[in-house]
Image (cartoon, rainbow, N blue to C red; front, side):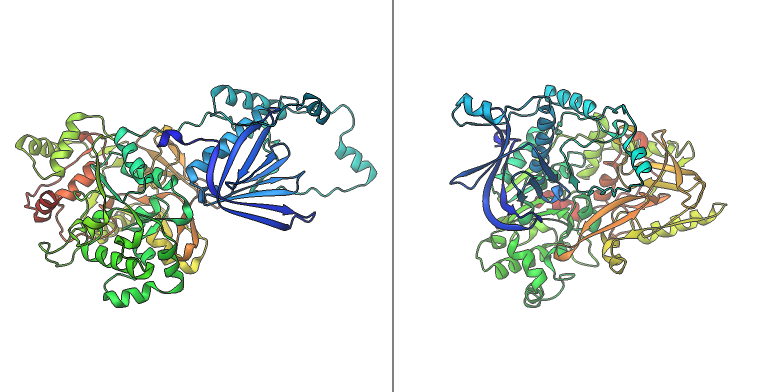
Length: 604
């Protein structure tokens, strides 16, 4: 199925608007299920074809503008200046739109050196009308596009007095119009050559056979649950799935705010609109029927749920009943396609004194088996390459730890916990312990404390942002503070989400930016970064903050767990984030029988 996707073709909603001289739409044609294709006509001119299934419309790609600010939401606009027409694309799978725009940009720039035929020559040629879809991008297209960009950006040597000097003599003042930031005034911008990035051939990271099978099952319309050990690429695959589905009818959710932020979605509770979900079913249905919430349920065709292992059975059953009631459908989950991901052998639901022998895990719910069509597992571990360490993790994952594995873990107590001033991070089961440890350690450091305050798009909704943001509103630092990076800055240099470091100093000036030395050896001045969050009602929020958090201690996950001791689930979740067992430092060990572990292995 994936092999038939053309990079020069889109299946989406299309609107074709005719514009008056003021740029206002005077005529509009809306095509709910249209096809947009890049191709060449009989004269080898690049053409954008819009097809409504009956008759195609062709637009010459010569003098046009691209508006791509909302491409990540599956939207873009192509404005054809001579024809006073614009084509608005919406509800397009974001990944496919990204490849389409890349193909358009590179192919157009590569063809700039070809002199177009005049209208007279075209008439004399007498060729029959033709349309051929553009071929996929090749290396020669990228090389040709870069060559044309270098020619366009070459500085022009003035032969006479400059325009600026002439204007100065004549006493003239010309107003220069600033270009709009979201618009490519020309597909080839005349930027300074030093700031012009070099085009490269877009190469998507290949999926494994297992991942491809999951994606094909999702695109065929099946309700899919896929699981796998940590490091098998579940999150990577989930993002590919979301990018392959139409955004208008796809809702990406997760059981926690941090997980939701990671996939660019919202929490499952926020989507459902029923608060904590503790209310009776009748009251929950009333809450879900509120105008802003009901729109989610009625427009949703594809519901993605990440970290499903932390969703309780009772809550899942309640959501299924709400979906059928609001959508007035007898189909499981109201006919919504479910794409569910998680590992029941990592993080279980948060329970406070509940009996785990009752319906507890999501797969124990009454509606699970009728909602999920396919259970699929990813088995190829990609994060680690050390086979011995992978075997150790798998043993911990299923709670069957032989003596040799136990001895290997206990020997980790002799591993060094300090390197280049960077200490090993203590992993805690409770968030309160993390905050107390980091606060006390920071106070013990000498020197002046620097405070960095976040800039939120809506300060009144800071609590909503806090629930999803990986960074806090206030960041307090000192020289010597142990920190962790919370965003990928430069993967090639090892500056990735989770990289550990220590603050070495602060830059002079008002901002006083922190300079951090990381375990990978890189020393980086940490500037402000931006995170986007999707709130209820389709509202987008953002936070700008330094991508750091204190890291003397961190929690296993954001919610508290029921026991002060780490379970097999949590121990595996921690260890699986490491590259090898040399990075483990086990302070103490306490064997513990896990009823919930046995339950998971038995029932799932």
